[in-house]
Image (tube, rainbow, N blue to C red; front, side, top):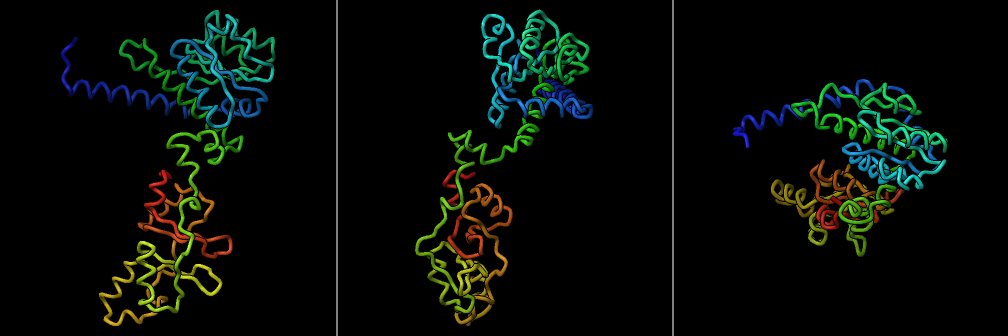
Length: 324
């Protein structure tokens, strides 16, 4: 083992990260109409997207297939060598193929391309050699070339795999936009674990709605003490039709108490916040949490489409539910 000090190791790490970041930035600058064409091919596929590669390219291809599938585009990984020993049976005429190869050469790729041509399957080539046999015979070519690998001997696939992986992510995200895939669709495909919880908890699932105490704008602050205690420091102020016209908090009450000895007889309308942040029962809990954290509040009234109060949602309840 070589004797390298910490400073040298840190410098080497930074060199690799800077080099790979610049490679991705360079890729973004040269992205062209071929990218849009590839996106449309994938989005319009009547069958599956078959993502194929070998070696390190195979590992990247497997991840691209997984990302496409999880974002609404059915995809499968096909190992280039195994494909030629029976696995080609998964490819159908309604599919689109994405072939990942740094060199764009090799007998396996040529045989795969011939099979795709017989089936009439469009091929998107992701390659570091835009003049390679793969690029020549592909329907669309995506240039994944890099000036050099991060490996000090320019051998181990490093910068090239990073660029290809990033381009795969770009394809998946652009295609999900084309397909109109949204957060609700994402939640349907990720029902398990914390991610599924975060994308499925709605405000209505955790809000307080039963026997919900409220105040009218003409009520006195003495009338607010019990409701504030019951609702953990935040109570909605509603008009005669049950529409939210404000919010009163324990902090509002405390500040008025310190400034006015006769605070108990002060009308609620003089102390309440007349422009409170509000929530809807059907919105994602994570969206409500973000709004509360952004504005430094602990609770929000929940209203229906007509502005009528239907509940009160608390930050702690949302966090306990797994919405964040």
